[in-house]
Length: 259
Ligand code: HEC
Ligand code: HEC
Image (tube, rainbow, N blue to C red; front, side, top):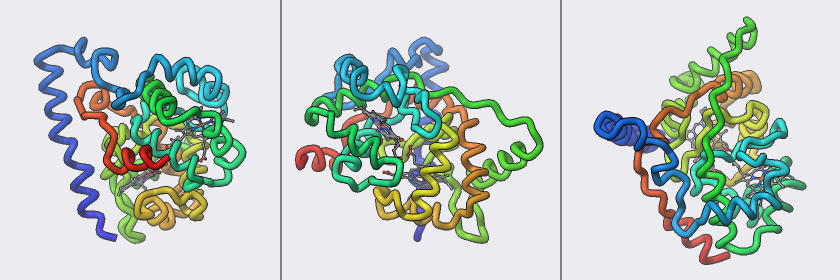
């Protein structure tokens, strides 16, 4: 697999970060507040309507603030709406039907009434403040795992050709929209599960098998190390201050039109 194109892709938002810093310097932090920005807006999605729908259909498992009360279930708050939309379509078409999705999301998506409601739901969850960084573990064993995870996140593993996660999921863990999801602050157990599913190939909805290829090269200990480190990432200020147009990608448009 040629990672160079992806690495270049991962790096390009540096320009955006620079613009964000300039914007912060010029406008001050008030304008960089997510409430004033375009964060969480997806073309045609209404977060207010999504909030009402989510109350009856989603928050029992994902929490009213998009932070899941259940260990092992994902936080959706602040996740890129396009990524969330793609996942809902993947659950619906059973392209994503890993063991945890069966009996949870595969059933939950059946309660969504059409494309408009789906866009409203992702606009709502995407507009919520993302999960906060978890504290760095202090006990010796966990700290060693954390350090190993940090090393893989930023440097990859040369011997087994594992690329740095940072290349696509960004330095702060905020992700790179629209394809590369936010990981910062995510639930540790959920991260272990998903990396294990990609490793086994039971989650197979990743474009070009990117994550299956990467996680396939990770062993159990490395997965645990990454899942110990990633929740402690902050997500940074980029997502709050950088204007990245949140329109739907052509691929998702086609998907939605097809449904
Ligand atoms: C019964 C509990 C349950 C309900 C109800 C539920 N979810 Fe989920 N959701 C889950 C679980 C568990 C997962 C992880 C599934 C997996 O492993 O593939 C998940 C995953 C997701 C994901 C993918 C997140 C990611 O980071 O990839 C999205 C998007 C999502 N849910 C949205 C919703 C929406 C919108 C609703 C309401 C219509 C909803 N969920 C209702 C349990 C639930
Ligand atoms: C070449 C780009 C790329 C690299 C490098 C990469 N990822 Fe990913 N990752 C993706 C894409 C694309 C997805 C979304 C897959 C989908 O559409 O379902 C993803 C999804 C994920 C998810 C699932 C998130 C969720 O909410 O369900 C996890 C966890 C993850 N990656 C962890 C990692 C880790 C850990 C590394 C480093 C060892 C890494 N990724 C490196 C592209 C990448």
